[in-house]
Image 1 (cartoon, rainbow, N blue to C red):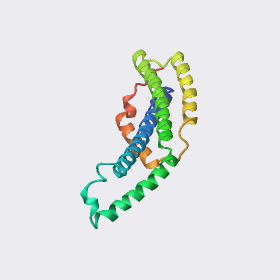
Image 2: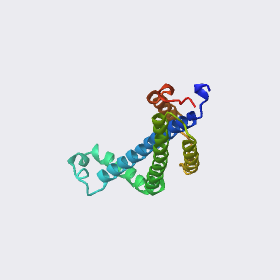
Image 3: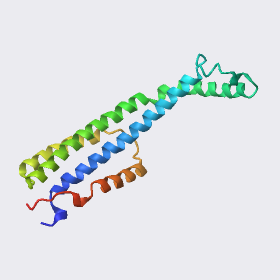
Length: 173
């Protein structure tokens, strides 16, 4: 059998795909958390009782209009914040990461067993089929949003560099 046609490639391709999903949603989660953090800091700074609000710099002809603009922006952000659903986005991404990390771990175990036993046995194939079912459910539960193709391409390249095809063991059977 040709190396490139061995059924073990299904496991290895799924492994890399799951790793891609973990990295992708981790990146998206980090971005949402960073945005939430920036908003929290901005709102904390612009509340009238903050230490920043009482600085003398805001009491002159230049500072007063700047502070007024910042307070107006803060008011709009405060009103818009509940509609941004940052908390639910964080939960959604954390759930996607957990599901795909589980699948990745299961596939990595199969990969290790193939290497250790130097065989892709019927038992491992059966285990792989169960994981495929879990993977389908995980994909169905992924966040419903357009894919960031640029991010996917960057991460895909990173994964292919860290897990090149020649790094996978292909059994003789």
